[in-house]
Length: 460
Image (tube, rainbow, N blue to C red; front, side, top):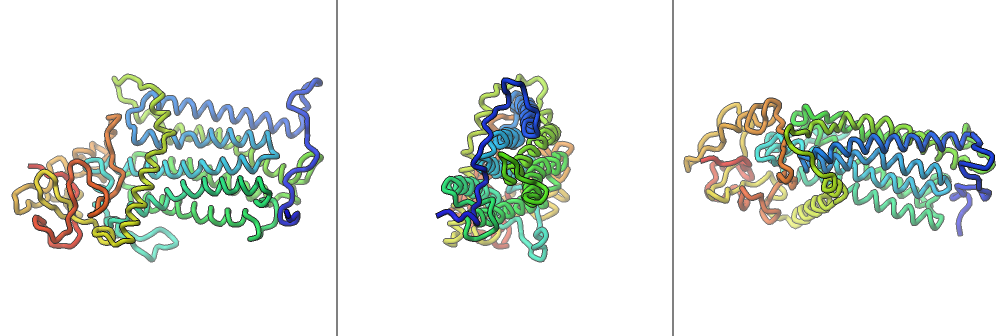
């Protein structure tokens, strides 16, 4: 039996049956004014989003990056449309709100994969692991700054990706659970905080999950901020994070005002009014954020002079095809299973690689060699360990991939950027240029240090 104290009804028994239009014209009460404002703002947001999305689709020259950008650009429009309907059909507000927050997880995951694409573009062979090889031991962000981590460990990128991608699994599941609980009257959002309600457990799990996701993003950004120079990473992050913060904290403010400043009316409870004000505020804010995203995620970065415009259909399909999320999640899960089973290469530093063409193994570059300060020495077989064009790769150098800024705008539509961070013995196979993985004790290594390798190309 439903407990009326823990789960008071969100709605009054008497419902307003009037529509926006009536035979006597429009009765411009506060509800209808809000209805109009929410609708106009939602339409403006959709138009601004459609313009930016349309230009990205017709200048779809970098599939890896723009696929994630399109997913992020949908966020203001999704929030505005759902918030409008939650205002219009306020008696079902909770259902709309749970659907709306589920898309937040997609946006955060897409942002991480976008950052990985940006970093990979600065590295040799466009592989993010070749960017990580340049990194030294780091301190974790606050509040765990007393602990340090080493980015060259095999598990680092898997852990960072999983810290964010877990949210794209947990948040939709929580939304589904919330919808079911609301249907059966046990969600109890409007009642007092109690562990006898489903709302308490959903809130705690969601809070832990999104905290872990944001912390993972913070770690990756802090580690790779040099590679992200010129890509407006702060603007891109704020355009997402501010949406999350505004919707969360203003919801708390309106909830706190219930029964004090916000009073019930003939047809609306205090909860209805607080939810409606929150939905109205979101609709207004999404106009601002959709305009801000036109700056932060500008399509002009991807215009290639002389290249004809692309069809919009494949970009749109790419943006709603989440198979890349599934691949990343499956790859990370496989690694952690191998890690738990103690497979070679999963616990220590990244192991050496063996070039499939030469059969030789190579160790990790040191700091000076990675940044082109001095050339890589020759190994015993006489093959040079670095190419002339590699000097200055990343970190603003003028190497083969760096140009003048350390960032190369890839133009090939189908060019592959390997997001799977590291290969390890018994794990994922390397890309076509790199063969099987070997422990450092195997023959052919020019470095006796355990678990070290060089990830760059071998030039004859």
